[in-house]
Image 1 (cartoon, one colour):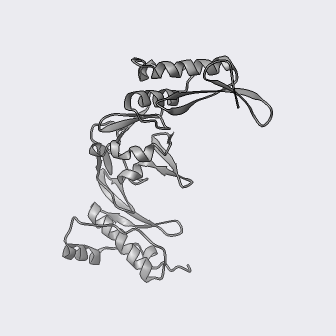
Image 2 (spheres, one colour):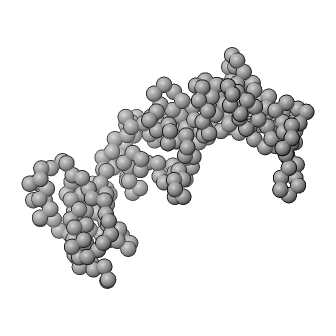
Length: 268
């Protein structure tokens, strides 16, 4: 890659011989790539735009971004955060004193506690409908799972956003009402009940119960039965601290479990 006569522009050649132009600048001893462009004028404009954002006494804000800008919105956020907070992050994050914003788009802004900054500065968030994911060890992981929200959890029943903002993942704003494995809320004849299922080689129904504590214990009992029947699979057990050991044992002993669980054998 060779330097071009326009400041901040570098001429480069792709493997197929195509020429393109890279734009970059240095700020606070940090070399920052601004992107690749098909002509040198666009690359230089990116350099001038980036330099303007980072200039001393610059008043350019996040709200000033326009879709026609030569810089991507992600880069716009990154530069302003670096200018204002002195920290360069590879994702569109703007840091505040006790929390930070993660900009999926200019109109979709997620909020997180400062404790999550290290994680999200190294994990790109993606969106599918109202679900947010990151790629972690080659898998798509729902970010809600970081906060004890199960994939099958029902908003407003199993968890709530206290301030009504479904993009605010600060822990003080999340109230988890069901953190148990295998338990999900259902509405039956207008009443909230709790269905329990367990994954063996597919999902098996354990039963439907009137309260969440009983449902959590039913899941544990199903695990015990499967292990007694010779199944070697490891299951995460539910930790139930809302009842005493004697109450737990009493509920456990009287619980009815689906015959499909009782009769299951690993070779069937």
